[in-house]
Length: 292
Image 1 (cartoon, rainbow, N blue to C red):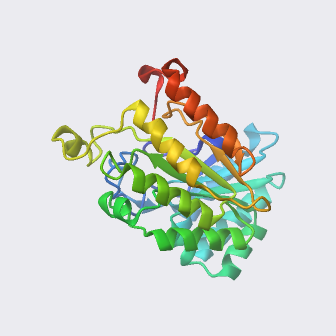
Image 2 (image 1 turned 120 degrees about the vertical axis):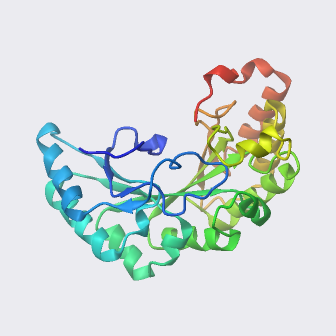
Image 3 (image 1 turned 60 degrees about the vertical axis):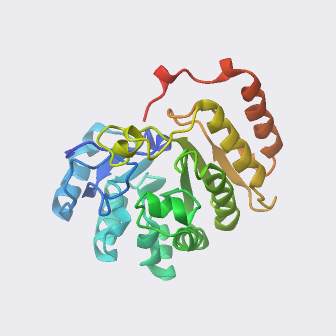
């Protein structure tokens, strides 16, 4: 398998075969992100991708899951996606699920019938970086998405039978917009009804554009205590119906406190864990063990 640049994947795809459809991210403008800043975006040829799929087949008796990278492989045309998925089904007929990164605008550019076709071809999950439910935070971070578009894109995927895993980033509003970020993110989850929602914590690489704002005092990072307060606000504002549960996780390496549960049934328990951690700082992950 040939890779170009640094290849990223969601934590839940750790055991998946990673196939690079695109190099980098077509947007690549988020101010908090350093993931693809050194890569020039391009689409790999179908011939190269299929050659990679065939090339590694002899080394694996069974591949249960395949993940399509890079940053927003869903931006590819339906013709190209059909070609790749057809090859996956031919070469790895035992594959149970294909996952893919997607921006909301890519999902909105696909018709409901096209998304259903992708589902039938094996796409079982899309990973969407919402980051915040606040339009002000999204604009400040140059996310290139809107609250309305993110909600519509995730709903469209879910209605087509493709599970959506949506990530939010604690601290992305800084101290100034902490409450707005927390409450609007909770309300976004309420409206999206994603199958999965994940809560990461902001960590800034020096090559991320926002780094200079932090150095100059124009953006204030949250303290660990404020991160817990923001989490408390966010979880308290969630209102998920029992018949449409959302699997919630804050077990990313960047987080100070790991939480796992289903909303709404585990909401009170998770809030209690957050409040217990507020009174017991020893429960928090030491700074040196946090990672992007």
